[in-house]
Structure formats: structure tokens, C-alpha cells
Image (cartoon, rainbow, N blue to C red):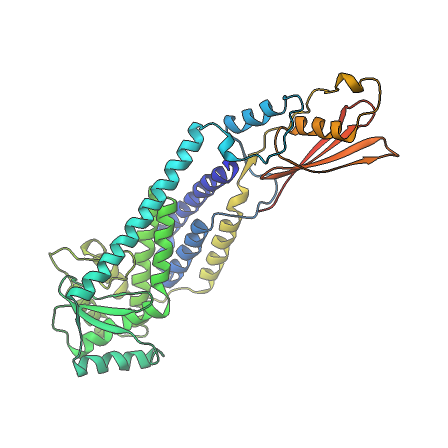
Amino acid sequence: MEQFVISFLLTSLAMTAIILVISVFNVLFGKTFTAKSRYAVWLIVLIGLVIPLRPVIGDGIVTIPLPASAQTQSSESSMIEAPPITAPYTLLDRPASPFMVCVFVWGIVAIMVFACHIRRYVRFLRTIQRWGTTVKDGNILSILRAVQAEKGLSNKKIGLKICGFVSSSMLTGFWRPMILLPEKHFETDELELIFRHELIHYKRRDLFINFLSVAAISMHWFNPIIYWMCAAMQMDGEISCDEAVLLDSNKENRRFYAEVIIGMISERSMARTMLSTCFYGGKSSIRRRLEVIMDTTRKIKQPAILVLVAITTLTLLSGSVFAIQEPSLPIAPRVVPEAIASGKITIKQAEEIALAAVGEGTLRKAKLDVKKGIYKVEIRDDRRDYEVTIDSATGEIIKNSMKERKR
């Protein structure tokens, strides 16, 4: 358990370093790449945060020892003189250590953070059902269906509601997707732009990506960099939709699109959840989006692929930066019952000696190699397999090997 938790924390630390590198890179060179490329890079990092398991190559650059509690448990148990261990070892047998208390607190807070986001999302949907008005205007619906056909989504059932408690259009709903519009009059060309933007979110499955962001924040709630990364990722996601809507557009169309976004500015607070998109993300982000909208310079594409490959490689190798040092497995002192001091030991006595040497676990099998005059005893605990080789004449332990099992 300790090894898994420490691996998780070290992975979080390695991913934080990657996030900081990406942030510096975006500040220096981000404007030369498309927002879609930046969004893809963030997505790779997000998946790396949600799936903390990594392949380990080599012995690691930095070696981290296991907590003292784990090493003490192993060393103390190895000095016991042949107790009749028959039941498997469990975590409940350990006294509560400060380390395990921290693990318990982390798990409780992670569940609470995740539950809070889900609860907020459910309340948001209930508010929509209660106060939202389904659009029945044929002109507005025809515009939506036309844009759906343009995006190849004619066979998808996407709802459309007007809600007075939102100040911006947005997409929400995993199983029953719907576009929400604020209580405001929109012209036909404005609606076309808004629907294109939200349907691009739908095609890219951005709601499910937002769900991964919630999972990452819940798992890494103790890491403030993750909160910042998810916000930066959502911003690049909105900008990448702007780029897709304005692909090959002239300055006049770009100016009009910017006016549509500016028209969403409202002094009132906006009801929303992380499990939705947002056409207008607030005044703090409006300046950056407007700069990108009016930017007509050509973005480079080929180097962006190299950056994606580099970040993917760094993410996969992040598990090899740190290596956890297993506690050394001490060889137990010679344990020879008085009754067998002058003769060969029995297989039962060999089992007791092996269990005493390992200190924990369940006996799997034991056999005598007559030619070599040794017993080979195999023992298994919740994480490792042990093979103890014992001299059949003296009861001395010749070899005590351990193998970590893959999970």
C-alpha cells in the first residue's frame, strides 16, 4: 500500500514538473502553435494525471526509500522465531501510522471533492429542468438543424433551451446533450456562430474531457498546479473552437464574431459547472480570446507533432524518474529446534524456519531436493513471492529471494 501511494505522489510531482515546462514553452512559443495543438498537449497530460500507473525503465534517477513504518514492520517480523503463521497477512493487522492516516485523509478529501462536483452538476441539471424553457421557435430550430447538418450531426438529438440564469451559451448533458442560450435576442448570423462553436465542443467530446478534469482535480486536490492546468486547458479548448469556427474567415467575419463574444459580457454572476462548456468564460479571459480571434498569422503544424510526441514520451517516462527503494530483506538467524540439532530436519520444520525468515505471508508449497540436500519453500504475501532455500541437515537458510508481483 505504501509503495502504491508513494508512486502516486511521485507521479504527481513529475507531472507537475512537465506542466511547468509546458507553461513556460507556451509563454515563449505558444502563439506560433494553434490552440488545438496546445489543447491536445494538455489532454495528454490530463490522461497522465488520471492514470498514474507508468512503465518503469531502469533504476530511476532519484531513489526514494519506503517509509520507516514499512521497513520497521519488515525487519521486526523477520526476527520472530518460527511462529505458526497460517492466516494471510492483512492491513488490519498493522497499527495506524501517521502515513496511513495521511492516506486515509487524502482518500476522504478526494471523494468529497469529486462528490461536490457531481452534486453541483446534478443541481445544475435540475435547475435547467425547472426553469429552462425549451425552444419551440421554428426559425431558431431550423438554424440549429442546418448547422448540425453542416457538422455531420443530423442524426444526433441535441436539445435547445433558453435559461434566464445563464449569461452565456453553453453545452451540457452527457446522455441528453443540450445547448443553453441566455434570455437575449440573437440574430440569425449570431446564432449560426454560437451553434457552430457549441457543436464543435460536442464533436470533440469536450464534456467527457471536462469529466477527466474533475477526476484529476479530485485525485490531486492537494496540488494547486493541477487546478491551474485544468483552467488553462479549458481556455485553450474554447480558443480552439474559435479557431475552428473562423477557419479561413476574413477580418470582417472575425470582428463580427468578437462582437458576439463581447455581447455575452454581463455584470451578473453566471450559473455553471465544470461539466459544461462556456462560450464566454469571463472578463479575465476575453482579452486573450479576442487577440487570438483577430490574429490571422499562419500557425506552424509540423513542429506541433514533434511537441506532442515529446510530451507523450515525457509522460510515459515520468514513472522512471523516481525509484522506490524496497527495504532490504534480512536473513533470519539460524533457527534450529533442539530436537533436530543432531539430525536432518523435517519438511514441517523447514516450513516454520522459512515463515520465520519472511515474517509474513501464506505458505504455498515446500519440497525436498534429495540430491542437493536442501528444502525449497515458497511463500506469498499480498505483494511479493518468496523462495527460501534451507539446508536439510542443519536448518540454515542458504538463500532468501523475493520477487515483486505485477499488478
